[in-house]
Image (tube, rainbow, N blue to C red; front, side, top):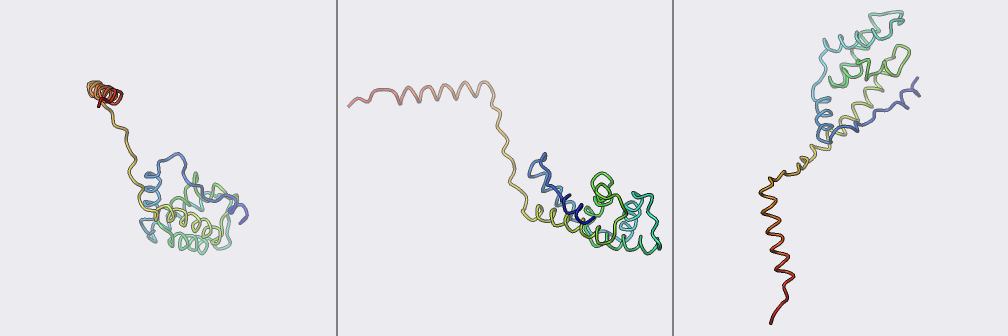
Length: 153
């Protein structure tokens, strides 16, 4: 089980701009998870394994909620998301150790991106009017004529 999680490490977003990646990472680690929200997310996470039948369901769900509460809200929400989170990689109900491992890896990745600081703004290529282009081409032509003129002494 732990082997599967190790091979499915967090991958950086590649289709987004550096600024957008930084914004997402910063947002994911900005807020802490409240006990109430952790309980909701734990219930959502455990509901993704309908065959789960722990011997003591209350203790199990409390342990999952307490574990999720330790992590930033964005990471806990991502862990509970069926499209992005832990259920995507596991066939069996997770242990506290599996949730901790997944959340630690994800949190470290987001914190690393967020700590790099906001990337410099991307340069936007200026658009010039046709009139401006004609004027600049005329100036360039005059400059070349002046440079190519023979030097007289």
